[in-house]
Length: 623
Image (cartoon, rainbow, N blue to C red; front, side, top):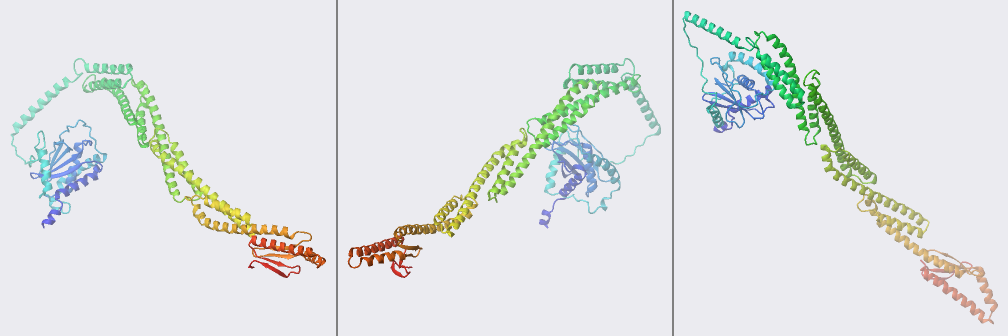
């Protein structure tokens, strides 16, 4: 049981929260008015505390709180005291008390606030609620049955530690010096019977009536312009003339305020003339004229006040577009009453000079507002483009995509550079511009590198294709040159580019192809030399031999004419001409040595055939 009691919120706290909700429902939802409740000697004390920056009208505020309490109908409560106080102040500035039961007569005691600003502001919703709650209070206090209310009643006769802390605060309020509200001074008013004799009553009434008539007659005679010289009327005319002269002499705000003061005094003098005065009608006509002049002066001063507010808000630019819109509205509000000043008004020249000045200030405010709006638009557009471009950077690979990234960064930089000076967007643009320019430079460099990579990769692939064509034609020299170019271009692709991924596997392949072609080119060169050497050996008159050369075999066939000539020379020499026979044999040996040398130099076996195509000799291992 102790645990449940300790964790349960106190009834006073519940009542505070419900009162707070009731007040929010009638127009206090945006006002920092804090409600606290406590008991002070059988009286429910309700304290409304708010900061000094909030100014409330005491009467409607107290009425709204009373209406909320009556609506909630807390149980076992007969007397209620309400206080309003400023946060940080010890004494309240307004008090009110009332009885919750018909047997108790309510009384109100509203004390004027000691705060200098007496023109309190109350929300319109509260003023409307105030009028309605007064009717409800009068009707509700006569018909409410406290015993019949079950669900919405509150038992706050028992208090917790929270209640004790509130009692201390309330006690300080009630016991302070100069506090006209006494929570203990709420006693039931009982009816007393008084017995007067009829004669005494008649004498008292008669004497009071005569005294009142005499006092009223004396008061009427002492009012201005009733008897004697009417100085109030003359003084009012003089004050009005002085007011006009002041406006004509100096066209300054001080002169307008001075003229307003004199005209106000003239109006006060005329208003003091009673309706039974002989000059009353004349005074009323003059009073109407003075009030029109006063309204014109009030309008001009109100315009100047708004203009001063607009001027103060315009200081220390740049300002946001919202602030410039507010400044623009203030200038428009300052101009509006000046336009309505009639030409015959003494303050018309001053109003015209101010009207011209304020219209110029309004035009300047419009210009600053337009510049601010344009700046904000360009700043937002530049930032949005930058966000999209940063996302595009993450997936960009080919030069075309990096060209788009570069173009977008250039767009953002251009927009930031076009933001007008003297705007809030310009200040932000100065911070963003170096970052965007750095991004632009990186995108430009990356695009250039990607273009180089693309060109190198394309040249490499094209050269490799040409090399393959020459391989098919066995043009090993041309093929080797193209394979060399293909390898060089592939190796020139930058490693940081997307094309490097494509070029890297080609490098090894191109190297192998180049080595293979170089080998074949070397063989071709050797065979070419062998062919040239065979041409030298085989050519003659008659032709010595015919030959064919391949990678595997050099085939040499003696020509029939050469064989026939050798045979004829050998036979003609016979046995007698040994020298000729030796010459033929030596020639054949020389031919054999030459052919063997050609085979050895080429590294290709040689096979010799006679004129009839029969193999007559082999040099080297035939593969």
